[in-house]
Image (cartoon, rainbow, N blue to C red; front, side, top):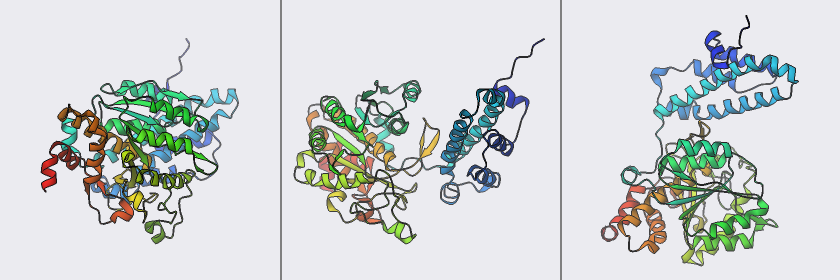
Amino acid sequence: MSVLPLSATEYVSAEPVTNQEALQTLKRITFWTWDEDVSMLLQNYENINLNDVNANYVINELNMHRWGQKITDFLDLATLLLSFQSAEYQQNEQLAFDQAKLIINNLRKDINQLILTVHPGFNLNHHVLSETYQGLNIKIAVFDLFDPILLEQQIEHYPNASIEAVQNFGDPVQLNHGNTVIDVILAIAPKATIIPVSAESSTYHQAMAYLENRPDIHIINMSRAFSSLDNALDPIFSQQLSHLLSQKIVTKSLGNTGTDVDSNVTPLRESLGLASTGNLFSYDLALIKEFLPTINSNPNIDHLLLAINLDTFADQIALSASIPGNNTLAIATSLSTPADAVYAWSTANFESGSSFAAPQLAAISALLWQAYLEHHPQEPQNALNKVTQALKANTRPSNLGAFNTGLGLVDADKALQHILYPSFIKQI
């Protein structure tokens, strides 16, 4: 009588192994001989005192929100290394590999679930706003890079939202960065409509033209870099962006360079003896700086919201954050929100960076836009200015100052009051 092979799940049930054994199995099968982070993470996890678990301990002391991505990176590399082996070798080892990978991946999920039990969540002061408004009938374009398979899964996962088919210009690389941005937006504005837009560097103008020709789009989240030409701001892109800003709010990540807009290392990093991050996309900061005078000279396009990344508890800027510094134009259009440990459904990990601060601004803008339209149905043309003004004029002060946080921390509920009761707000 023949015996059918066990599936990976059945095999785990039949032959239980420890996390350490699973890790060693993966390393043996892939001929891994160099140092990796996961061994130490497993040891640290086993030594955790669950009675002492709290947000500060888990996030600040253990940096546990970074563990999931480190485990994911290890598993991805292990999978790639196995693919380099012969077909016969892969066939012989695949079952043991899948079993061990499943165990380590389940550990990653357990770690992230533990973090979620103590994570403070979004720090936007949006409790009243989100009780009534969820972004219904508000359209947000996400100009980014996407994994199309994940997009299909997101459509099923977010039944209250509407996610349109991705608009590809050229053959952009497929990455899940934009999927994570969508996760952040829909976690705050679960009934919004999402328009994914993706482009190569050579097709930026086409993508921007598409956005210009969609007057129904209210907000654009741009975690992609501004377009450059000969190491300067692309003049055609600049014109297109100016036109978009006369019609829509654009939320843009300020960056993760560890510097201010003038390229000086942040005081936080300097105090720790650190240089700038050397981020590959740091050139974007210079392009933002070059574009800011355009807004200053034309108040009709003052609808750019730059996002500064703070740490999880808003006590300090994120270690990698780009900040306005002494640039008054950057201060005047920058808002701060914690995005140093944002949980994303698509990756099932905590993501960090101003790329995930910007979609928080986009989502809050969507809720406020919906509120304005419902309370001022006869004046839809004023929504763009009113929502932007409400966000900029109503922020929470921070002892970090404008140098670090721009206009300050987002205060969505106060911005809502500004929209609903403008005359009252003026009096106080």
